[in-house]
Length: 71
Image 1 (cartoon, rainbow, N blue to C red):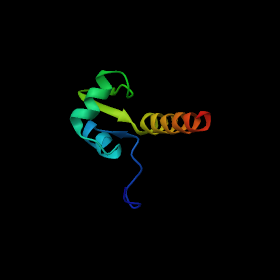
Image 2: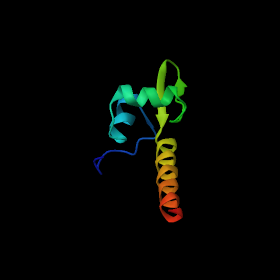
Image 3: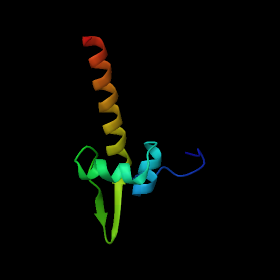
């Protein structure tokens, strides 16, 4: 993200997939499976909260760290 850009609170599926370094199909598959946060719908638009995506990544990183300590 460019530091001169305004902070985005909501992103499209394509932007969310790019943030998570995956393709759109993989992103949607994880959304459908309930692994990723559900989107918010505003009018006819479907968007994801950046905060929800960050929280999901942080929770996954914490779980991996805890597994490493338990091993």
